[in-house]
Length: 291
Length: 291
Image 1 (tube, rainbow over the protein chains, first blue to last red):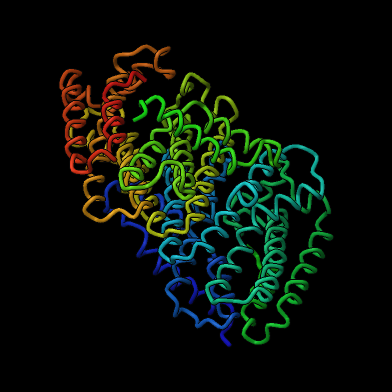
Image 2: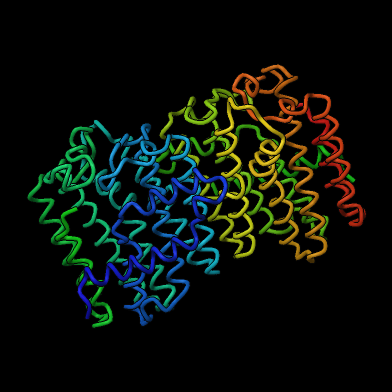
């Protein structure tokens, strides 16, 4: 059993190799759009979604790194995630200047290239998924991204700013904006390994618990850490009146809730045995992470 | 043989029925995103891309309106087109207040909903294509939309603003920004009818000629017609220093070139016989249109 940092670095290596291959070089005309796509994709993301795809694939009997469709899905999910970050950071949305310690896309380039760069990543990600040739994977992904998924969560997130937050709204935002794509990552990894319905059901629950825990920890970090530690503006959530867990439940209860969600995630996959060890380690890492 | 206005109204009826079915109602939470998606999709577009899909399908032996996959592709292409218009109209791009005589999405709603509404239409359109279950159609479409297609054209369009235009640049912009998706419409209609390679090649040439003619006529109309006739700001291209055909060749030569392209489009499909009659009529209509 490799350690988690070692696993994540192997995931990053495989994912980045695939991304290098599918993303046109900056020397390809028109260069500016390829530059912004690459700038944001290679900005030091944790590659959490690829790690979940690969770990779920392994948990269902797949061999690590051996399956081309898993690599394409990993690259695609990282591009979908990057697309959402670029658009969320725009002045008309969260208006963020920093992301992972670097200027956001519209700051490093300009707003038009940030909008179009996000669009192009989303389109290229769908093209990667199409190469896999599995309509079920495409539909699963599109549903997780759309207005009943990531986009829906982002809409409610923005529309809730500055209003008194309630627990139901925060749950909706976190489940849709963050947990939907994380759950889809886990499911797609399993689907590509041909997992039976019973296993898919367990992994879906795992994904929902881990996804929600991830966003709650994100909220907690925004409250507790400094800008330097985070690589993005700290306490920006509170300044903006964002609907977050600490805002509705307080810090201590948010931490207990994240703990509980990770415990539930472990329970979900307990019957899957040793093959699911990496998924267990990822769930524990989400609780412990510091940025 | 039905007249073209009659054909277009039947295409609109079928496409809009499918769009009504796939687009969530405004009453579905979160309502604002579904409202902006519907506002822009049902803003009175000509449904040219669906017409080309259906006419190409018929030209290759398909029966009009009988094939579910053709309806899904038509709805998807109209959503891709609407997505591109919403983002192109944004303040950071063309900054347009009017489109088809109505306020643009960011004017009628706000910028955040315009960005996310465009994103959501793109995602839903891919979901519709995934329902067809044809990986070749998905890849064809993604390629036509990406940085070697529509997005690439939009990037060069924006970056060429206010600079002295040359013919090569204008050709690139028009071929990528407009003709790529129009060509893909024709090809996808034919692919769904199982057209052989030889026919696809002819229809590809037809699509490229018709797509380029369409954009040149658009440029000419922007110069010649009033804002009221166009439903969008007239002469906005010249004011912004856009790279257009009239700007590099003059109005008269632009008109002659559009004529010539339509003649070539007719030649491309001459061997396809009477089944291709609607495609011929559409090409002629593109030359004659007034908005």
